[in-house]
Length: 352
Image (cartoon, rainbow, N blue to C red):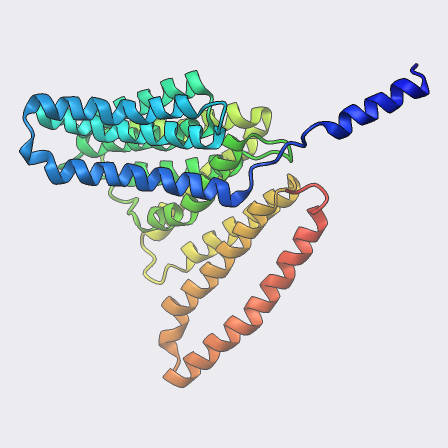
């Protein structure tokens, strides 16, 4: 198609072009840390001089505080995109402080979940306009926080929080399953991290709540429907037809509270946790996701340790219990690590 002279000129042109320099992780970390420190310093300065300001200057300061970071991000856009994303994120985070301070300035009616809702709406608007993954991650965190806050205020006298812990546990499974392959977006990767960090604590809290205290009220039924259908709807948006596998995670979540009632030794709960850990690892193998395999192995190890400390250690003497604990750490750790490596090796060509 081309002669030797044209080919040589193309090679010279390509060789003379400046090679793009990828963003290195120290720069990303420095941008994120610098933005957070800047935001913290501004908030600290405002709190130190808050009592000295009039209502007018308080409101002006709130508006400037929220608008400054977004304006700075616009200035950095196109020159230092990583810094622009970080500043836009800090601007959205500062919006939450601005909403709270505005309510304090004008002595508005206190209903703190509404403030979180406004904050989530602001993050959603920023996500729609900017398309940054950080804004989407904030929405993914704040919307469940708003729903949990509304339920907390609604049942303040009843103190029935089981739908919150179960809903967060099911949603953590959904976020963890957001990743599909090597070409996943940064938002999917962030959701996977959020789900992985929240899953084990949420499951532990769900297993502690009592199922027998189940108020016979319509609002409780609505709360349970929202707590279970919201994670399933998000899973469908993220995974399509594969969301059918998330139904098993919801069934497993619903099985935790009933097993904890009427069982002082909690053996059934530990067995249920072990089953869930094995199932999570199997799910990771099926979809070639290394993070689910790793989290499943970690969950199984934590379950065995918790069972040993709560049910076995008291039956042994001091020296025997320490010897058993040492054997458990050495032998069990070696066996679990060996199993984990074998499982990861099977899916390494497909996993990220």
